[in-house]
Length: 219
Image 1: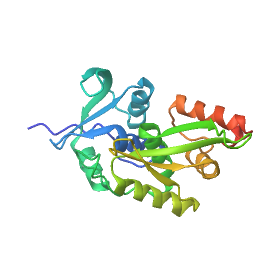
Image 2 (image 1 turned 90 degrees about the vertical axis):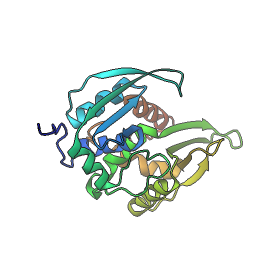
Image 3 (image 1 turned 180 degrees about the vertical axis):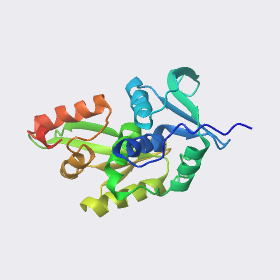
Image 4 (image 1 turned 180 degrees about the horizontal axis):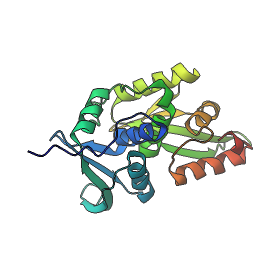
């Protein structure tokens, strides 16, 4: 019997940690103990994922009945990488049961940037209640509160900021949000100088928002 092919080099680096963040949010571990499905509507996201793990599989398309449209995805198999992910805390069908992950402190911000690019969001607005009050939020989203609790704890341990929780309309997911003053501490860590990889559209959106308050230079 032929040995299973090991496609992913398991070695922590900024790129590897970023990819783990993406898998945590947008990846799916098959119950077969070998295969992965990484789905995204953003082609750059898939290309970044391929680059960070140095895998050559082709990006394909599939019909998503849930989203009622065709989406792009990357599929591959790697038993050793699968076992590694189980070892750090990832599991199949993880959306509501995900908990703590074993991420090296050195690479936490790269992991968090991948996590944010996967399922996070950033939005801003002028608050009509106060003159010249421009608000913005960095948000991390998950169906598992236990996972968000862990994320909140890690960020607090580094920056002493707490954020706050909100629920989706149908209570299917929660968002861990950091408002303006806390975001100004968080964003330079996520997008530290010479960081390796990011999703361009989110990064540029944040840069434009920071420019409004004269803080574009912090990332």
